[in-house]
Amino acid sequence: FVFSLFTFIQIQRLHKLTRLPLFARERFILVLLSSIILFGLVIVFLQLLVKAIMSERKSREQLAIANEKLRQYALKIENIAALEERNRIAREIHDSLGHYLTVLNVSLEAAWKLRKSEPQESIEFLADAKQLGSKALNEVRQSVAALRSNWWENQSLESAIATLIADFHKSTGILPTSNINLNYSPDNELKIAVYRIVQEALTNIYKYAEATTVEINIFTTKNLHLIIQDNGKGFNLNQNTTGFGLQGMEERALALGGKFEILTSPNTGCKIIANFPLVTIN
Image (cartoon, rainbow, N blue to C red; front, side):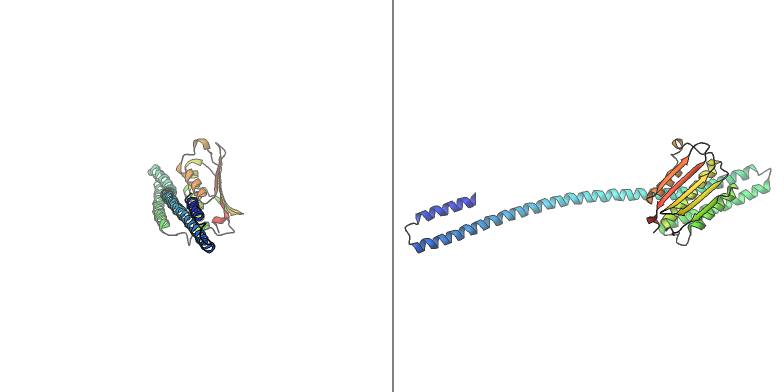
């Protein structure tokens, strides 16, 4: 509008100068056209400047909103990380101590019952209990060390599982059969997950299953597969899924992108299946 008004005023001035000589009118027209073009450029520049200022203000507002959302997301991630760390520590405490304390309690109960009728055998159970107490203390130390460093660096999965089997055999008289066939060397995170799942499964078998045979199979195809099977009394999944042990085993598998499944029913034994993607090994 301003540009149109300016142009109209200049044209009116041009009509009043018709009595001037031709060269004067031509010069005036040239100056007039230059003024119109210059004024138009100034108007365009001002429009672009205002648009740039408005765009910058809008960008700043959007950036402030994005920063606030980013801050909120960071707080959420921090809270989730803290929760995951607490859960990890809880699993370590439960899995490391639960196994040995269960066996320790049974050994002490057996020693108490045999203290009068079979004192020598009672002493043997007490010796076993003392050894289990030492192992439990060592497990606590290893769990604390695991939170600080990779204490699995020089520990193979095969030897760790063999120790669990030996302890289970000594406590129950049942010797689990095991078949470990790995084409890849698991990393520490995966070794710990497999070890803890086997440990918790053996603890549950010891406490509840009343089994006479136990099979442990660990092998690799496109995934790493863990299968633990017993011929015990089994249980109803709908009534036995609230225990922290079962939840902890599933969480360990899911944390590494794996899958966890329990196949059981009353009087049919129990099969625990955990599959881990091969990428977690590499």
